[in-house]
Each structure stands twice: as structure tokens, then as C-alpha cells.
Image 1: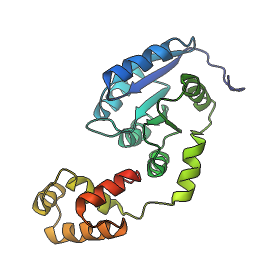
Image 2: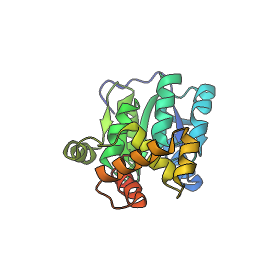
Image 3: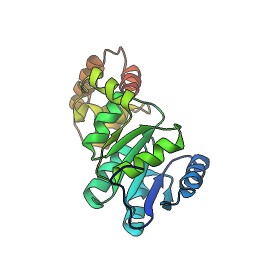
Length: 210
């Protein structure tokens, strides 16, 4: 246990994981700890804030790749609407860009999924002492990788293009002139060193920039 960890009651946990089987298994493992209690489980990012407002968790465990609204976006929502809840981001892929975005979204911790449950439970307890908990290997990789070269607008048009949408589709969805969409897609593709729009989306995702 962390030295300053003195919970007066069970730690209330919100668990957000897209895979139902994985979510259930993790809830069972966490529930075996005498000081931890999973009070809410959700399967998509758009349900995180509503669940947090109802159940008032102390800690939210958010998968990066949640359906509908990603874990990083949900973390920012919690920061703005439920600021007392500490957020721990969990990811299958240790991408440096994800770590930077998680910290910008107000997350207090970032761990790679599928590690020993003891590491996760220790991280939860450390968060409640005011610590920031980051996977050491991922922290080192983030320092070496540097920041994302993409602007917020470039990221937005790349995300909108991910399903094969046309320039006209993207322009309509984002309410931008088609000429601006073309310019943003071109600059984003060049910045990531890609030869095509799908390749740019793939490269940006691999780095955790989207």
C-alpha cells in the first residue's frame, strides 16, 4: 500500500471498457480487493459522464478505444464535469501520442492494459494519494517521440476521412469549405510522411495522434 493511503471507506470505481467480457472480468478482480468497489460499468465513452454523475466514483478506469466517444475525450469530459474523479487511462497499445493527449485531457494515470492486476490496484491507490501514475516504458517513449506535428484542425479532418469519406462529405460534416478541407488533408498527409490519405490516418493512429 502507498504510505499516505488511508481510505475512510471503500474506493468507488467506474469501469469503462468496450469489451463486455473484459469489463466483467476486470470488475470481478477489482471487487476481490477489500478496499475497492466497482460501482458502475459502461461500454461506451458517451455513457461515462452520466454514470459518474449518478454514482460519484473516486476513480474512473477508461479504455482509450471506447466506442462512440474515446477514452481520452471522456477523460476531458470528466475533468470538466466531475473534477473530483481521478482518471486512469488503460490502453492495449502503448503509443506515446496517447500519453501526451491523456495528460492534456486531465488524466492522472496511464497504464498499458493486461498487466498484473496488482499493478493496477496499486496504481488506483496511488492516485488517491495525489500521485500521477504513468507506465515507465511509455513515459520514456513519449519523451523520445516528441509532440504531434498535427494541428487540431488537421486531426479533425483526418478522423473525418477515416471511413473513406469524400472531401464533400468531410466539408459538410465539419462545416468547412471544401478548399480548406483539401488544404488540411494535404498538410496532414505531408507532415506524417504519408503518400495517401488512408496511409496518413494509419500512421497518425499508430503514433497515438488521433
